[in-house]
Image (cartoon, rainbow, N blue to C red; front, side, top):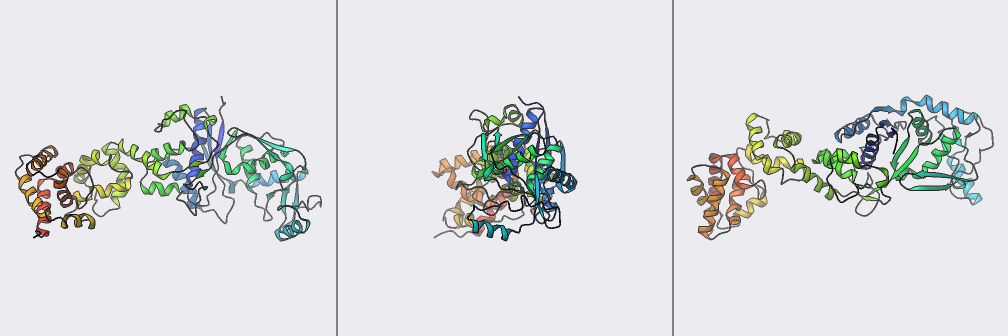
Length: 470
């Protein structure tokens, strides 16, 4: 369908890496790889006032984390300024652009006085100004006709040239604007397809006009739908949590986030949710990208994360959770700690939604003394039967020949049947004594990993802290 396309992802490093940018990068990568093409990473860093080197590093790091690898780059626009200067000069020499010394206040006053729509009024279009410090270079937009964007997602979109101002190509300080730099770079890098966010569609006719003025053919465009929040507002850095780095820190797996992102605006053609990267590569095409805004639902992404965490082997869970474990005082990474973690890992991975939840599921194993959650401790102290149940549990568990989860559960079930109490009723004070919490890994598995000596000591310790209710 497509012959070796060349695509590019060209973010501006003006903040943390936006999830919308990650989705756009992913679409570009999948398109390139499915059709045997090339994925180029280009950084639009010409805005010195807003760009920071650490944000470039953040973009590259986030892409690598999501396993979106580039074939060429990263190219920096700040190192390519001579290309833009030459292109600007050629447009001026051909009469396709002109210099303008108008100040914004002057433009606004003239437009207001003449009763014209907001925008530039073409005051310098025929003044014949030459290059000089402080003068911007504007593109001379044809006054008649229309410019058509033949979009691979949205079809043909026509723009009346009369509604397009003579836009700035180069600012008065010599800095190239977005439209000029992108056109020049896309030509120089032989980009065949520009897959980018819908918000760029209004600037696309300007780009096409520049391509034509340079005597070049424009690439094919595909504008993918915008991402919105639960109020159907476009995701905003100031209002919404949009940084890929934030979700990584929260404990999302890269494969879960990638799988969720690919389904924002694209469909595999059926009801499947969970897709491997190979399945995505087999199915991805731009004709399955929709028009409607896509709801970035963190709850839904958490559903994906739970699924992928549940598939992890004990070793992989330990590796993935290591940054969160190493941040806690109880973890020293010894072979004994790793061994006990691996024993409990199969029970943990089906009960958490984020990797950051792992430490609180296992900390009780590595603590010399249980740290009680206030609510959990309160639930035990408020129940007059807790002390008696804890003391009885010590008697029952001490008599076991083998301190394994099956034997522990069987003993508790027999105790429940004999006493007429529910298994849950018996487990609550035992769990709090063992783990300090009301929720966590399966109780009897946790007790087996912790061992009989520690368990019996903790049960007796909590019993001694309670006062028998009168």
